[in-house]
Image 1 (tube, rainbow, N blue to C red):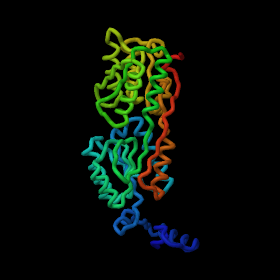
Image 2: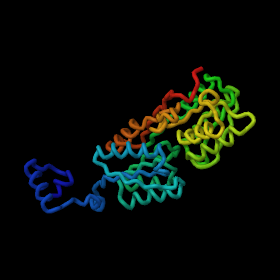
Image 3: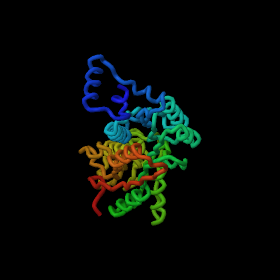
Image 4: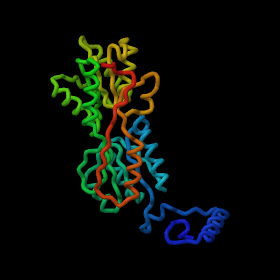
Length: 309
């Protein structure tokens, strides 16, 4: 019976059918968690993320869990605060459940704990993290080139007073986008007004609109480091200041979450290839690779929030 449920060893098709039929009649179910206790792979993959209700993380978790299910993996989502301590605690939980892998979507765990996971035979995949821990798998977006392209789009539209709406979260990916955009602007002699008012959410984008557009010389081109910030900023610009987008003001986001296509926004943004990233995560966790790095390009998606030059 054990070979039938574990998949280990060969079982004749007729025997397998008989065993499964008998198990169904008896109400028997294999205890997959017990496998980890005897050294067999648990097939559990922990997804460690913060703000799982936000559009980007919700979409990414949906795609990754579907891919893992297609590969007979079981996803366990741990909702963290995103800070190092809570992410490290999540990794400890993954070890307690004898997960065979952890995928870190938010925050940066300590290098020492990552090495402990690897020493215990657990795979660790870091998504859009800048950690330099050895032996982990890395998947990241080329934020630098995308942000340079964002600057080019705004300048082609004739924007000269630029702003960047970021957040106080200071995650590696958001810091890279903010830095890449401002550095590209510096190279062409353009100053960027960077605003970090609160967490990475809709309300922060809305408040950023109040602050930036309430000035005597408001920006005419704004790059938001996430779509969610852009949604709040756009609603504030239109509803509070009566701004015409893109006539008076051009706005660019980042991520291309499903809501970016809604008629209320039709946001010009940069698309993270989440389907390809999710497939790559599944491929890594079903292979023998170690310490690999996979880079993906974020491509511009032109909609209606940037003027044609």
